[in-house]
Length: 188
Image 1: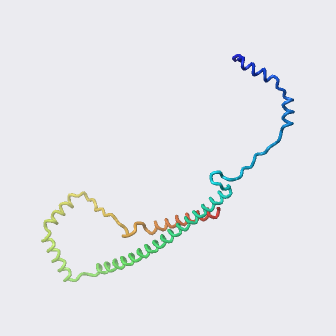
Image 2: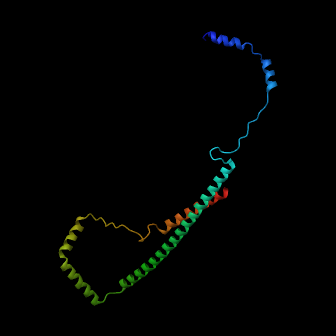
Image 3: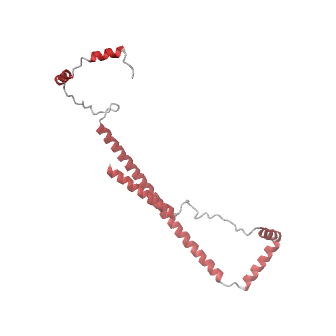
C-alpha cells in the first residue's frame, strides 16, 4: 500500500468535520419527495401518442393481412380452375386413347385376307429393293451395339408443366396459408 499524498491528506482533514447526525437532520428538513414527471406521451419524432402509433400499426397490419388473404384466394380460384381444366383434358385424352387402343386391338385381332397378305409382301419386297444398302448398314450397326435400348424422354401431357396431383398439393398449401392469415387477422 502506498502512502497518501499531501493533497489526499488535506482532503481527508476537511472531511473530518462531517457529522452524520447533522447531515440526517438537514435531510429531514429539506426532503421533498418528488415523483417522476409524466411525459406528454407523445413521440417527439412523429408528434403522436403511443396509443395512436399502436392503433395505426394494428390497422396497417390488418389491411396487409386482408390484402394477402384476398390475393391468396384469387390465386386459389385460378388454381382450382386450372385443375378442373387439366382434369377435363386428361379425361378427354384418356377416352380418346382408350377408343384408339380398342380400334387397334380389333384390327389386330381380325385375320388378314389373302389379298392383304399379298399386298404387304409386295410392299415389303419393294422397300427392301429400294433400301438394300440402308438396311445392310442398319443391321451392321445393330450388331455393333451392345444391346442398349433407345432412350426416349417422356414429355408427359403436352401443356402447362405440372400434373394434377402437383396442382392439388399446391392448392392445399395455399388453403393452409389462407387459414394462417385469417387466424392472424382474427388475433389482431
